[in-house]
Length: 219
Image (cartoon, rainbow, N blue to C red; front, side, top):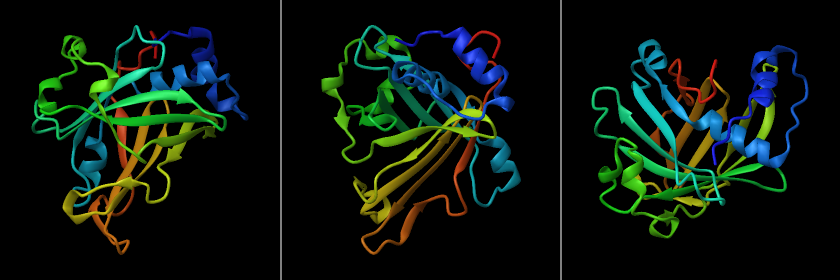
């Protein structure tokens, strides 16, 4: 499902400084979104600059169920740089086009999720989408935008629709900006009165792509 579209991405990434308006067919846009999400990112630079506010986190995303036609489907995990083999967050995303842009649906793995750590393709062979739990209200709707002249995506969850019980929260929100080399993600939890109870306070985490992990040769 994760196709390589070299001419398209060469135009978007190689000459992005001169790109003023971003237009893309839905199928190509979904594939570009999958390409941008796939790979390894970390927040070490941000954590070093602001150690009181951010932790060094490794974010890794890879395709699963690549023979399915209702995707792309991606598995993502986050782990502290001090314990990369013990991810603290593991999710599955399904990407699609919508009438107004693109969507990343969020799913939770069956327990124990630790069985799927490390993204081994074999770990998902015994699973299907029906085995996942949908994160109701937690989908992220995205627009394709021009950010500093380059193709990127920006979006968020809707209002208070994404429920959360973590640390006394009633709901969670997520704001995402994503390009080929940088993923900014601001996840926060709020109680019933609207007070933030978890998540970074100053702003989003900045996950920088680890060199060589963009799934297009030469980028």
